[in-house]
Length: 439
Image 1 (tube, rainbow, N blue to C red):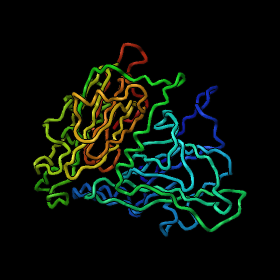
Image 2: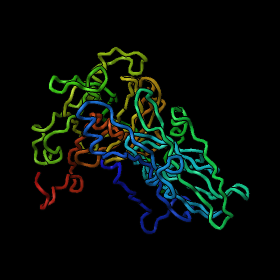
Image 3: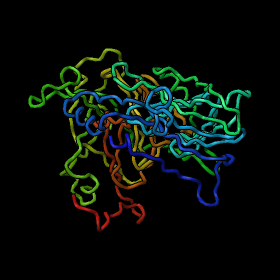
Image 4: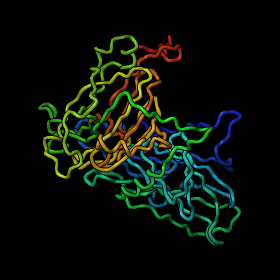
């Protein structure tokens, strides 16, 4: 929960002598979407974990640290972006929120998307973007005033809510784009944003993302796969132990979440250290499954209540260096279902396919995009849907894979890939620094 209040932008620019695959903008501006709790965020998490309940929702959504003019607390501190008519601005948009994906738009202006998760995309122009928790999007904004009276325009971020049973902060955050060297005006135009539950608008935006796939920035999509995985993503329950009662989760149990019905339990010792010192067996089991333990209609409306229960475990998966891995994240409607921004440390991956309903391993791969799929490190798995990713395991080490919604991760929607050393010297895990503190 610490990243609710401590976050910032790490910006990667073209290497010396290289250029953007588009005309250099007049200026670059980070736009960080986030959340604010009036309470101590450490206490918010501690209270939820103590009782097994859902997390207390934030009190406001924010743009560059401020809720904006729709709420009374920003006053004169609402973020304002001064622009000059005719100039092009690069907005580096980062979703640092813990619990929300956002629709984002600027009144009176269209946005040209040029990058996602630090990888160039084929440019496309849109009235709004959808950005999941943990994702980044880079857009170009052409500053063009409409008429002579409009000098101020709201930019706004509205959350997407896909599970009506989940409690979340539904406030809209705002900031102001204002033209300098222009007559002042009290009127501020407001953008048109999709409805808070419009998952189809989120899917329509996401479907437009494509890798640039140019000579200078090729798309090296793996055509053959060594390891196939289907991983169900679910919000679950864990039975309330007698010494924990009363629990405040569903049906008197505790909230939990899982991948392939395993709710990850953080070990008493770090997995990286255990692996490096060849003692992984005392910390985790190395049998994370490649498939769900039970096949059923994952996206059915009325699932049997016994499917809500999961169990804790620390189970990881080994990958040989150079292995090509395909992971299909399969959404479920357990406890109503939700969208999930799935993030993998240590790698970017190609999002080769998406769909609604249950993944069909016999027919859906024929519809994959193996030419110019988006290259990302966080993929949005739609409610009642699936998403397929591919990556080459050429970064040796211990890598976390998890849902970027904080409560889902804390509840156990995570696992670990351990990529073994390769043969070359630069394909081996580096030793810990000699001055590394001992836990």
